[in-house]
Image 1: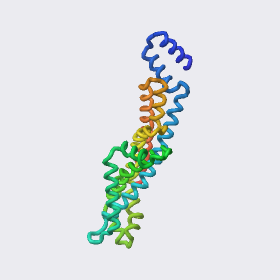
Image 2: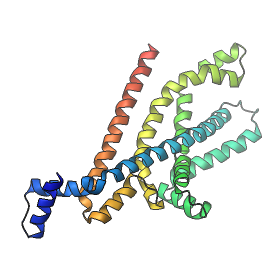
Image 3: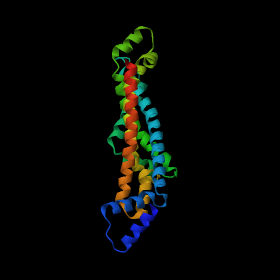
Image 4: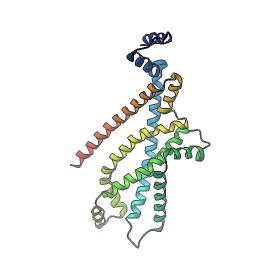
Length: 254
């Protein structure tokens, strides 16, 4: 393949017009195989998946706390409301409203240029920004999953002498998890694509490394095609895994 590439390069230098197949091979080889440039894409995929996993882990922890606070507040009886819980609920509502109502790019730039402007660990800053953003959406996913469980389940558990916390832990949450996990899986798939914006922090994700190859070849189109195919392959693989997981969940309900 290297010999064929050199031959085509000589033809181009001599002014010969290449056929479609020759031109496709030349540009693909230059963007992916020449000088082991495929390693740039592989390294970028590794960073993309790392940031995605860190962001989603933070999002699940943060979202779980926010969701449980809001559910606990909503389940209080009229006239017996806890004022401290009310304050926490208001903070959680402001958090979800602000995060879901502002662009992720703005949040990322605020995190990197204002809050952590002295930090050079851009990977962690990017993961933190994406995790905080994800937490607002995960909170609504978990909250909706809990609310989808029939209220009679909680009432039945309380009539058996369980506290609110015990009923939530042993009765409601095991049923809610089956509603929550597929949506969390979709959030993971979405997060893989959303990590592309962290390239603006100089993090060596797939799109950042794609830019390095573009500046080396001065031929952006094949590079973007390759990156798009890699993103598509990642999402197809993750989507297939998610479908298998959902199928097992449905079978376990029978």
